[in-house]
Amino acid sequence: MTTLNRLVLWNIDHTLVDVGRVTREVYAEAFQRTIGRPLVRLAPTPGRTESEIIFETLAFNDVVTTDDHLPAFMRALAEAFATRRADLKTHGRVLAGARETLDALGRLPDTAQSVLTGSIEPNAVLKVTELGLADRLDLEVGGYENGVYSKAALLELARSRAGAKNGVQYGESATVYIADSPRDVQAAHIARSPIIAVATGSATAAELRGAGADVVLPTLADTDAVVRAVLELTGR
Image (cartoon, rainbow, N blue to C red; front, side, top):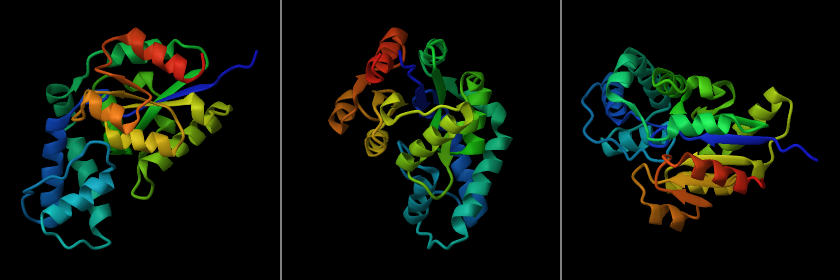
């Protein structure tokens, strides 16, 4: 019998954790440090990469961008997040069922778990580390915002990294993305990978179904439902 190598990639914000308060404070500080004046309006964040959020935020605040803005803003984001790592525990939270679902999927044979996120790597790692989820995920092979690739391309990159590290091949249909926004659904479709969407972010279940998610769940609280969906989507 052929062994199925399965890869589960997790979105972080509003799928596994909610650190919205800290994120808003960090963006305000990074904007002030980079532009030299207070942030008035932050761009929408669900399903987007950091560079998309930064460029739209700059436009919303009447900033004429230059080539220096993106790297400077990303550096400021990383520095501001690092100084608030304690706030992640105080004001952040792990969403219902996330910890239990990570544990349950981790017990499946031939299954690896990592992240696919629009956050830059240092901030993504801080979020899951400070909220106690890092030991359940292989963060070394994750897909992170790097200013170049779309989320669909980052999904492919994470799949390739995980395969190279583990000495196996993760097929498109054996790589499941779990996320919470229609933009994440679109990224999974482009990468030809199945997606489980949870209505724990700003999108409703109806919007996620309308975007074409393979499975839509209200939350991660029903661990068995998530595991069953992963198994069914990957042919087990």
